[in-house]
Length: 206
Image (cartoon, rainbow, N blue to C red; front, side, top):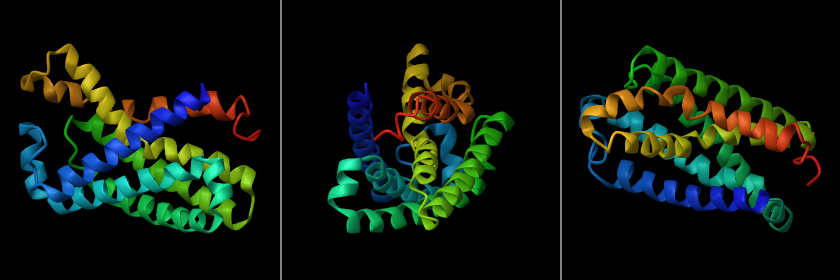
């Protein structure tokens, strides 16, 4: 099960990182978003690009914090990647607070994304504090929780495809599908992590 989860994370993280930089950085602003999102994107393209770009960096750099073999084999590189992860999460989360204020899908969606960014910031601070205290047991718990929130960028799109498929990918239904994602993209992630890694103490036995 653990190997399957790790393989899933690696494949989706690489795919998401490439997609983010291609669609949000390389292409013209608004090229890949839905028609309903183009107005907001045109008005806030910079904040969205910063949020998405640093989020993608955090998604990729944080992946290596979960790989014990990589951490043990390349300790110096792991420290650098950890600092990159801290910085990227903070930039993406702080800009995410602003992005959440104009997120599509209504008030509930805005609250969902805003709450995600608040918890994202608090958990990365807890990870940093544990790291500085050299409390690796606490650090691993908090970094896994935090990465579950970072991974929300992946699960958001997976849920979007899954739910939108029910409506035959009709653009007229995009808004009602998107309004379900403010909480759905990250709450199940935390529930899964708490059950699979933390409550069963599998993380601490690595």
